[in-house]
Image (cartoon, rainbow, N blue to C red; front, side, top):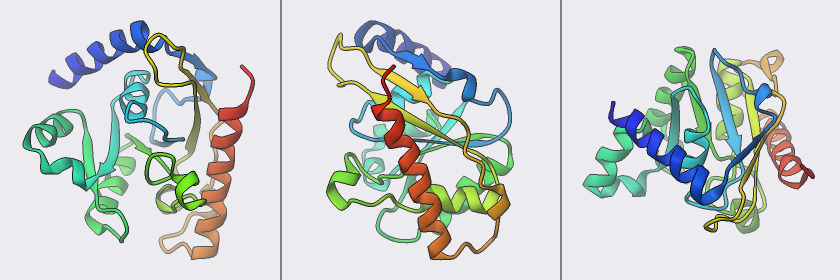
Length: 195
C-alpha cells in the first residue's frame, strides 16, 4: 500500500513537473519477466521509470544509499535493493535472478553510475549477465531531456533485445562484453532518436 501511494504521487509529480512523454510503450511486455535498462544522467531516472510502468519493478541501487535508516526503509517499501559496486556482489545477483525467475521486472543502469560512459567509457556487465543467466529479454530505454522543472522528459522504449540463444549459467567475458555493448548501443541510439 505504501509503495502504491508513493508511485501515485510520483506519477502526479512527473506529469506536472517533468511532463513525461512515453514513446514506444507497445514494446514493453504486459506480463512476464524482463530487464529494463536505461541511460543514467540524473537521480530522477529511477523514480520516473518506476512511476511510468504499470507493473511493480525492482530497482538495483548503490549500497551507499542504504546507510541512512530512513532511505533504507523507504527503499525497501519501493522494491529498491542494494548492490555493492566495484566487486561481484553474490547476494545481489542471487536476488536479481530470483526476481526474474518469478516473472518480475528488474531495472538496471548499465553505466553503473550517473553519466558512467563519460567517466569510464564502458558499460558494466551486470545487465548482460542477468540476461544470459535467465534468458529474459532486455528492454532498452533512452531518457531524453533535462531533468529541470517544467522541461519535457521523453522515455523512448526500444524493441525487446532477445539473448536467449546465448543463455548460459557461466557466460564468458567476451560474450558479456558483446551483449553489454549491444544493450548500451541500443540505449544510446534511443537517446538520440528524433521523436
